[in-house]
Image (cartoon, rainbow, N blue to C red; front, side, top):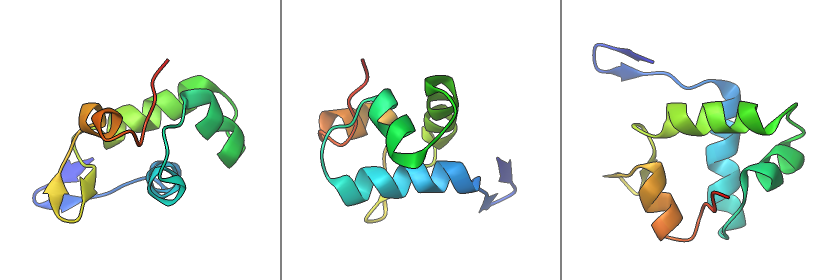
Length: 76
């Protein structure tokens, strides 16, 4: 995921991140799966875990736990 100071995201991880920001409401893994037409909840979980160290909102580094705390992600 990291190469020196460069960060790369898969298209799916970016789509998940943008969905969470756009919806501006808590979403379960299954809701994300359905909204993006992904094949399984495990696929969503995988990409959320890859986003964990990278998720940034307004330049503030956050992790999935903080997204949960902000009400942008609901993990069941």
